[in-house]
Image 1 (tube, helix red, strand yellow):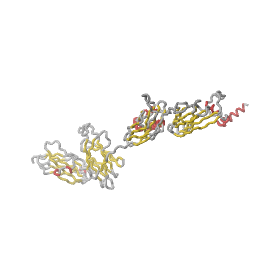
Image 2 (cartoon, one colour):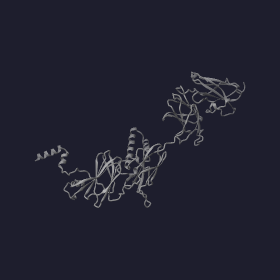
Image 3 (cartoon, one colour):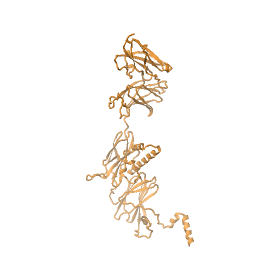
Image 4 (cartoon, rainbow, N blue to C red):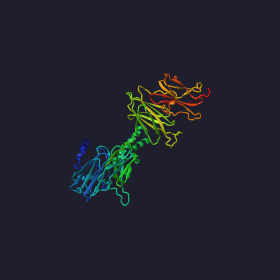
Length: 570
């Protein structure tokens, strides 16, 4: 006898679990943990991917109608409602093991199971129908095939609305009233749930969310989107080893006005209204969202939230694009044109004057020459082509040359820099912060680089060669053949301002001030010195001499003014 029992046990072990189940009665079921769906209470359910969760419930004797509401989160789910009816009511005392759960007791009895409703999707869905025989148990099956997710289920018995979920109006769409460069105004039809009674604030409020990606079907999906965005930012922080301030600033650009969302959220199974970063949270059906970026597309969602029951309903969201920034006018520059520009430093302005130049010739080379007319002012020059920045320079009191090469068209942007603590430009005086700048653009035919500057712009006078009616001057030239012009003007002996305005063009000076013009070229830069004798002067008088280097390309180069007094007696 003992040997027979051992053989039977060995056969059961080696045959696998299927043989053990086969030995059980045909109406035997596996022991599952039983989850009961309570009436008039939101039941959160966690759905592992690919696993079916079951919730059971029975109805009261007098209940003739039931409704089941299932609210998915961020991913589509499958859910079905079935009822198992019994021909005979099960006895109160059964002979089965006490380990059997109540649903298993119902399963052992004679009867049949009928599937009464099925839904697949990610929208909030409600089944409403009549109750079956009193001796019935209902089974709610939930399954997620894509990923782990959260679901909320709600049971209501009897006719009429449950009152647990906010009611949407007949037109649940969100409308756009106005769109600006940094703000958008929205409105929507009010919900009948938001009612002020006896002067008390209702427990329903609107919540408006904005993001860059897409509209959300429910508030739980918005929670998931915020949580994933935070996790993505945290991973990026660890990967790039950036500081927390940079990561939070980047996150704030994506999720506006959400200080609560920057906390470490755990997966929530209910719509926690306090945890969402609502840009508008009010009982009014209008909202203006500000602090947006220009020329950016945004998605707007409106939810009506029941703060007591922790439920919500979603309006049909909308999206729009903010207006782009007003672009400054772009002035075209002609070939060889000398352009006078008046710039004003403004701490609130990030854009300056813009110009466009198209060089001639197949080489597409050009020369940009700039010269500020204020000794303490500086300007930032940015040259770009087709959205790509080619060069950025700061131009001060010295004449600057910028070589343009390899592009059919150039965009030149001038921006005045902060005058700082300059004594000539008092702070807070906007009229003093204006200054002039002279610029010229020209096509550089057959050139490969910018023209060469003289090694020094000083003018030297020879005291031994100074007479009662003549003065001998010398200055440095370049190895290129260029034209030099000398100008003179007589000033009083007690004059304090002896220098000539450096932005004064030779063409703007009187014709009688021009003394002579001469060509000069010296291939050795160390010996590139030229002289000139200025005669027909008056004895004992004070003169200011200016030398201009006249160039084929670019603005004329003015040497520093030289003051010389002729001899009184010879």
